[in-house]
Image (cartoon, rainbow, N blue to C red):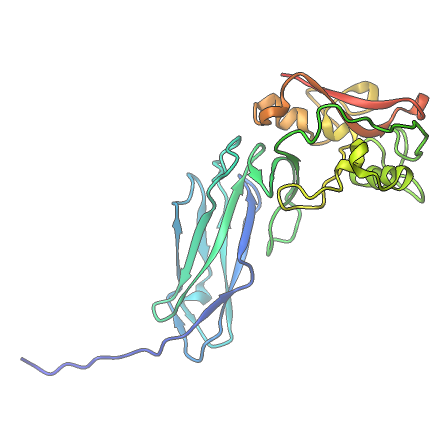
Length: 282
């Protein structure tokens, strides 16, 4: 036997600025900030993932994370690869649980979602991304509901001119960018028709669907592309849309059935009786 010395490091605690982070596959790298909320230095912060990171995704741990003083913070950066963790078309994908810990700390976790067109997130199929959001938070985007909310709803039982929501209207006082801003269009339609929400198409969007209550009736260019409605062509659509990014890729589930769907865009030459619709078909 011989004498030996043992160094016991005091334990500390960690926290993160967010508990869930969504990224676009092959998109912008995004950061999670780790803070040492304990009274001792946190040493050698590391991360692990379960299930494993999809192919191409990597994590960068800032040098400051090697020895993190009390109340200090450092960044863990996730660099998304081309393979999503939420496989397109899978309606209940498993998020990645990222565990963050130091040699002498507890473990904190965050749910990571690496998404592509057709991935299901927040109760819908993603068809539009906004990767310009701050890198300290999730990617933005728009989803289409997982299933039809009606199989025969009317646009308006008593046709009227809502105004400011046709394919030629532009954003302004009392007007929307009618061909592309379904959220604005929907608000104007509901204001015009009223509270019998379950009797008309835009009104159905007032429902809570899949736990979310911020749904709207898409504008015509959000549904698809056609030069007649100023929405571009198959090779050059005006904007990200359901036809291009979901139907044409086979990732829209029950909606790709050669059915017609209301848009929230009135038809400029006949606003009282005309509304643009889209036929989802491969």
